[in-house]
Every structure is written in structure tokens, then in C-alpha cells.
Image (tube, rainbow, N blue to C red; front, top):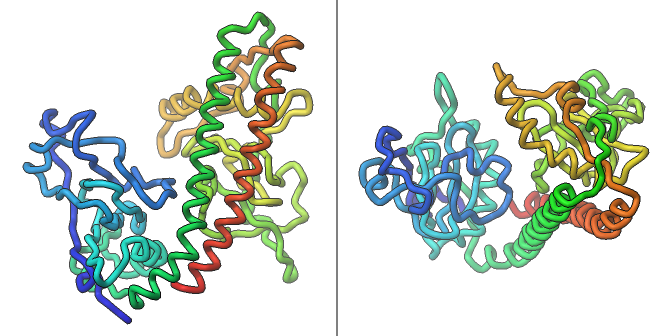
Length: 373
């Protein structure tokens, strides 16, 4: 049955306390979200963002305190980020959130509805400097909501998959944190005094502008890996493809390390099978050192690379190969390498397997979303 959003819930905007008043912000207070907090955020529930506001900040702004289970929908810059409030939460003016009437719609069901409505919301947005969905438009936006019984049935299919994806992400985050602790401890305690540049430990092969290599003559081709696919796990389906005849050096496969050196600098393990690597991304390989060693040293310097990119930024920050070369890497002794490999190699194999499993689960989830929404 078709409903306007205002018929199945209350539409609530947000606001920003004045930054001139330090007393409106606090390290531990009322969670306060901006659309940036949902950038690359793929979990269903969210508890807080980067900043918190005080009770006074809430009172002296148009921000509202939303109850748990509210559906948070970004309405500008950009449109269509969605999450469910895990607890009481507030947002800035970049949201048009929905406090659902649970007699009509289950919050988790509405979450999936709004996730699938991103393109439709963008179409009804307006604005000269940037597009925005107004409160009026959001209130009148129509969605198809079946009976509660049907919603529950559909969620019995979707929720276990979504929960497994999120559990896998937490496991991989823990493995990532543990491997960093082990690696940092080795750096501090190592007896080795042998060092070399980062670009001597690994080869950083840049991708290509894949729009020049479109599939020809009805060829299916390969999906193209772009920056937006990194570290997201359940990204949108690839919209771009390239010919499978591209050079092997710019092809990636499950388990390959990818490093984004421009824009949002990030490091990832690819899990989507054979694909073409787009420009502004490095495929990181080594014929001499183990996979985990290359990954950990690149991760070790990631923060400094991000700072370098920010300092150089005009429109989009980036690093140069000279930055790789000036980053020195400590080389383990023979015994240290054996000990580290015994610990870290199985952890990285597990991380790759989990990433691959999540990719498969995400495809299953997309098929169910296409069927029911």
C-alpha cells in the first residue's frame, strides 16, 4: 500500500549549535550527526558520530533529540545516506529523519525502503547551489509499505544476512587492530637496523583511466574498481566495466592490496574477484616480502600520507611517489620474519576469506532487495 512518509511517521529536521559557543559542544554528551558521519558507513545502526553537543547546545539550536529506532536520512550534501538510531541522537540540518509509527511500519523495514529510495529522493530534490530534499517534499514522498506480517516475513530473510555482514566486519576490524598491535610492538622491539624505502619493499602500480577501455563487440568485460568501492564492503553494484584485454598489471583479484593515493587516502583488501583498477589507485605487490608485511608498512605510514595530502590539497589532496620513497621501512631479521609470519599470515588469510564471504552475502542481499523493494 502506498503511503506518504508523513502518514507513517514524523519528519524531523536538524540543526547546528553555534560554533562560537564552546559550551555547546562536549567530548561526552548528546550524540550529534552530520552527513559526513555516514560517509562510508555501512552498518544498519549508529550510536554516535564524531561530535557531541550539550543540553544547552540542543536548546539553543534547531537540533532535535530523536528517539532510538528513528530512521536517519541525509537530505543534502549528499542525499540518501541512511541509518537507524541505536539510541537517542540528534543531527544537523543535513537530515530529514523519520520517527516511524511502528503500528504501520517496522523501523528495520523502513530502513531498507529508504536505502532503495536514494535515486528517487535525488530526483525530487531541488536547489541552485546544492540539491536538497525539503521537509515538505520528504513529507509527501511516497513509499510502498505492505502489512506488518509481510514486513516481518521479508525481514526474516534480510536481517540474518545483514547481521552476518556486520559481524564479519567487526571480526575483521578486530583482526586489523590486533595485527597493528603485533606489528607496532615488533617495530619498537626489533633488533634489526636494516632499513630501506617503502617503494623498494613493494611495487605500487597505478591504475588507468578505465573509461578508455570500454568493452567492445558485446564483451561482458570486467568490473572497474574505483575509490568509492574501497573499505565499504557492501557497495553499490559496479556501474562501469572495462575490457578483459587490459594489461595484467592493472588487473586486481581477491586478496590484492589496493591503496588510494588521491582524494580519500585509504588502504583496502580487494574481495570482488577479477577487476580492472581505475586511476588514482595503486595495486600494491611484492615479489620479495609477504603480503601482510607490505600491507602493514603501508598502513603504518597511512596517517602521515593523509597529512601530506591535506597539506598539498588545492582541490583534491594526493601523495607522490617521492613520499613513498622517503618513507623508511625496517627489515626484520630472519628469525623475526619467521615469528611474525607464523602469527600474521593466518590472520590475513582469515581477513581475505571474510571479505570474500561478505561480498557473496552482499550480492545475496542485493538480490533480495531487488525482489522485495
